[in-house]
Image 1 (cartoon, rainbow, N blue to C red):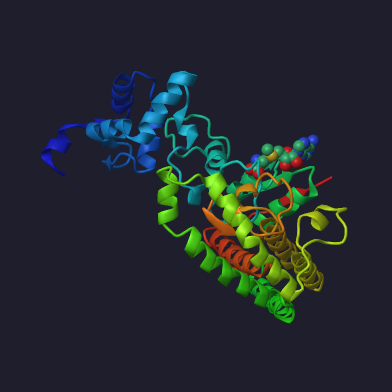
Image 2: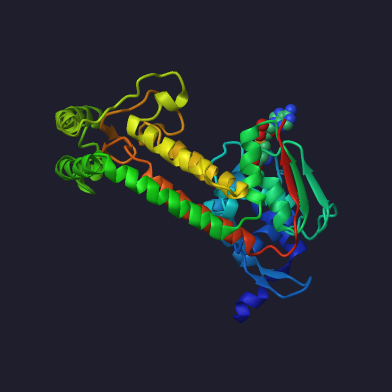
Length: 381
Ligand SMILES: C[S@@+](CC[C@H](N)C(=O)[O-])C[C@H]1O[C@@H](n2cnc3c(N)ncnc32)[C@H](O)[C@@H]1O
């Protein structure tokens, strides 16, 4: 440590007073400990004698994160508990292990639940509600974040939710699995799905379409020149993209008729009828039928969740409209997100394989750190 650094070492309490004065807003000792925990300021000293560098604090409050804290305190008041913003977390932290087994819009970030279960961030907090071995009840458990965090922290957990699907996701996150059985069953289903894909014309159609799109995009939407020209307003995106979207359409239609590809299902009664191209729907049915053959009920549940996640990613919509479904898209289209021509999905195989691998990895990651035996129960009514 440099001598000059040593000079500006201060305690957590002193740091909170200094920071409060420096930014003109209330900064608690908990806020300072949060910065230490997430590596925003360096920690010196051990066991209750934590010291930090004053200059590190200044650097932090001059950074983008620090400025955000000041701005929000200006808007909402200086008693805002910035620790609970979890501003320093990366997406990988908030979606760690089983928290990303399936999308769920109203999901809490796990660190928030952790904070309220056992606040180890804030050494000064008096109210630590739960200890290892306690039972946590979440009566509105949604996708099961509280149950997962309780399990991870050596507590038992009970979750209740009115939605049977949420109950399924929550249960799947905390269940104990025979991973080998999941691998055997997913391999079996993937093999069947591949056979299904190879027996249809879809693979050849998709390959030829991908090649044609690649050539077309290289010509009219070259990377990075096209985006550079867009950025510098040398191209009117709306007019330019409409022109080339129209120009590609006959190429697409010719391939559709060459391979005899059906673009719509016969009826539009259900969500699955409307939002999936016929081939995608057939592949979904193929996987669904194979799932029905699984004997182990836990394996069956988690593989159903993999299928559900896959189905969600394969809707006939544009990349820009994934969250807000407008109308099914059954042709190639100019994609504003990617700045080139894109195509709808004709097969679930890629996503099925991706999510299968990802799920197994996440289940393994979650199992390993567990020390205590947890009993988690989730019911729907
Ligand atoms: C905001 S979500 C909870 C999210 C959860 N904390 C998570 O991280 O996934 C609220 C949940 O309460 C459930 N819910 C609403 N009313 C309920 C009721 N009367 N009984 C049980 N669950 C209910 C909803 O189905 C929803 O899943």
